[in-house]
Image (cartoon, rainbow, N blue to C red; front, side, top):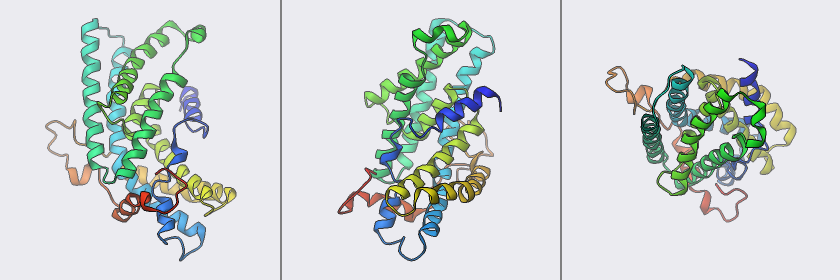
Length: 287
């Protein structure tokens, strides 16, 4: 891993990034309020929830992260290879990528079974697109800190994400978190493997953050769990799910089997509990 990629990882793992993840508990608040946290110690309950949630999220979201990342990376590598094309051809290529991202986003919306998860995913997705345009794009005042070739690359990539965000704002597309995360990390030059790993790590970290805010565990306990328990869980799910794809772009590949190689929900109980979030008498989190 080179220094540039390491620096991007540090930026994206910053808890101060305005991505809206702190307002979502991913079903953990409902899990606790429905009594599933009363039979064991807090640490055991939290780790069990993180394990089940992480497994389900990896199987359902990583295929979309991967396909979105690959589509935006294809556009990026086309120009990095020294190729060039006319304005009409470039616009046609951007339009095709946006159509592909739209297909991915629609499929994820269809496969997300409860309205609470859809609401959180869309809020965090558009926050990522806004983060790129307002926080990661290069202002003219900083143009002296990079080469002209790098600036040209950034302008081309920015076109895709700016148009994507505009479609979300116009409600022409949902803008779900996995699709936006895959697009953002590809635009920033993060490899697919690192994008997948960081996405699952951040999901686990947000669950532990929710557990701390719910007073289920303390901040020191959360760090212990993050270091000793979460690492093998993330590694195991990455090993299982890194090659999963949505199936939208497999073409005539007869070896692709939706039930084996495609996205899936592996924790129905978690979906049911998350969908009941709005029915709680009092709530700390929006979702």
